[in-house]
Length: 180
Image (cartoon, rainbow, N blue to C red):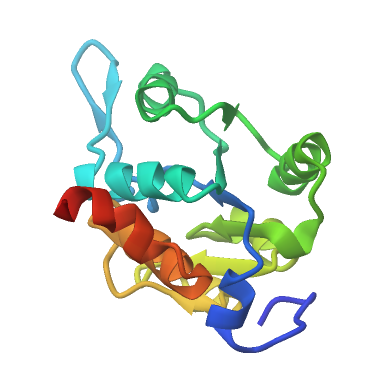
């Protein structure tokens, strides 16, 4: 469990989330890195995850991406989803998250982060709601309050988004416009 635990109940923690930050490789993607012969990198993003991010935004949650790699693809995906807070090439994700929280005037209890590897632990161990994916190493999963059933890049972010919105009582209102 994360160090700042005030409740061991993930749903109770999700009710306080105001900022949701995500790693890319292994969370928003399946973690595979694809390169062309020309050295160009490409990734596959899941549309269900993208819709989950949009739904979180619609419910009032600020969204961020914090990743240790840098890629035009990620910048394009962030722009496509309307994600204003993009941190790429980050070696110290904790410092990036602190900067984000300071800029939004929130503390760690209002933050969620979804990561899948040891580089994410300094953030996961401080967040109000730490999330991970089933493919993450056991050490990372042990520090997560919520581990998705869906894999990274295979709907994990959407599952997490719906979990948070359900806990906050906003999921039905967000979905209502699709049911009209």
